[in-house]
Image 1 (cartoon, helix red, strand yellow):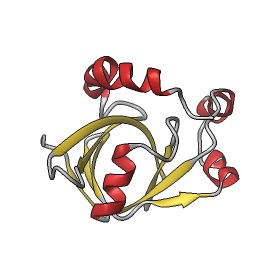
Image 2: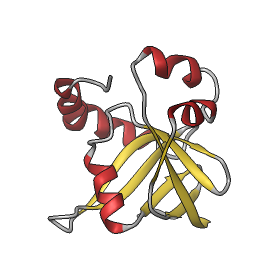
Image 3: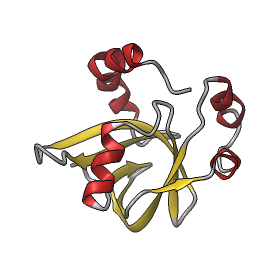
Image 4: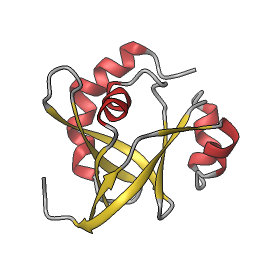
Length: 133
C-alpha cells in the first residue's frame, strides 16, 4: 500500500524542498525529469540505490507518481548521485522480490513495513562529474 495522498501533498509542498539539499549524500539523489504536458523541468528528491549499470528506486508513493510517468514518456531523465550526473534510460518495472533483494539494510527491512510493494530500475547510460544543473 503506497503512502496516502494527503502525505504526498505535504511532502511535495514542504519536505521535498529540504530533502533536495541532501542529494548526493548517501542514498539521497535528485532526479531531473521533464513534464510530459507542460515541458517544464522538475527536480525531485528520492532515495536510490546504485548497482553500476542501473539505479533501483523503491516506489513508496506507488506507480502513479508524476516523475515516473514523465520518465516513461521521455524515455529517461537525469540524476545527481554522489558527485556524478547520470543520464538514465527508460524505467523498467521490477518484480517485488527482485526489487526488495536489491535494497541494502536497513531499507530492506523498513520498506515492507511501510507498505512499499513496487520498485523500478533506471538504466544508467552515461556518468559524468556533477557540476550543478
